[in-house]
Length: 304
Image: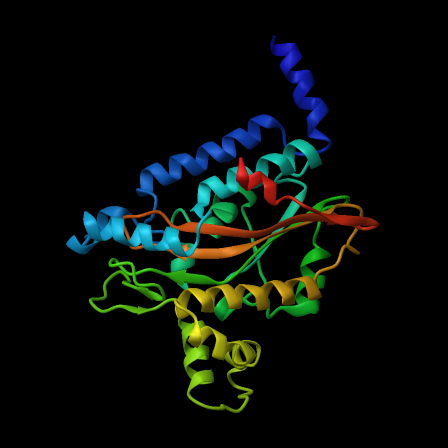
């Protein structure tokens, strides 16, 4: 039995990490989440976090229900991670040793809380990350940033890029708001997107060379702000429209000229839930491509 198992693993490795490493990586994620309660404070211990009453009972259920209605199909970070990584390893031979990882997510520190997809992929699987994004989650690194990153790929190796904006929910389920650790009042999440929306709807604002990332967000979201304002849920619509402009920008800067390996793109919306609840991710794009090969849509893996 053991010999047969080894043979199967070797056949599927294709120069990548073996099944044992893959399973061990996922096990670490589960263990980490169990230790952290699913949604801790950065690198700190949950023992240092005093959960206000508002995070429990009916209010927590209300926040979950509101988020589910706004972003149906969203799932926990570890669920997205396992559903995405398994076919990449099994079918394409992509593992942590032959793949480099980049992400274009908002720089907001809550996106690196325990249980959030970007942190899981970095800390528990790939080990390192190339930051392509800044405030709002747009890939400000551009073609030069992606070119530099993709030239770090192992010989014959692969590239994995995670991208998208984020949105917070208050304990009462208010989208676009978040109660941060140590604060008594709600703040905006995503702050940069909310600021861009407010700036666009309050009148024209000139480009500022000392505020380039926010200027980019205003320019891209400006034409969409009227529709966002007229929608039934402007904060949810803001996140959806931000995703569209970020995806468009990602597709315009990536290429497969780095070698013979695969380029994988996983895009979606990071959902920051109140503390005491896990963070969620709404997958909206999952594809694989390579030099001389048409892109393949892999979104069906999230339907299983």
